[in-house]
Image (cartoon, rainbow, N blue to C red; front, side, top):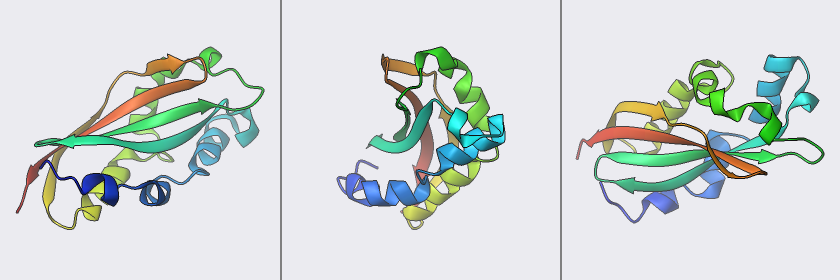
Length: 133
């Protein structure tokens, strides 16, 4: 489903609605009992598409005065997969709904954390699908 409109569909505004900025605070509040304990902000980014999958990324950006590298982000894909605040399953359903019946999600997975810099770590989200039209 190589569609040049994917970047338009998954623009920054829509991604912010799918995964609001305050979700990181809710996640840390649930995890630590205090949103201020969080070392990073979480943002959903669209990273492209292929005939059988969509690629997204969770960008973990270090908060001022915090240490991203000290926060064991490598175990996060497993945590994100199960955590009710992050709720990947629901997020994938919402992404599928954005495409208005053009695809049927067949699977999704979170890949290993990638350290792009000391201030930015990325967790890829790959959504496999089959076209319906």
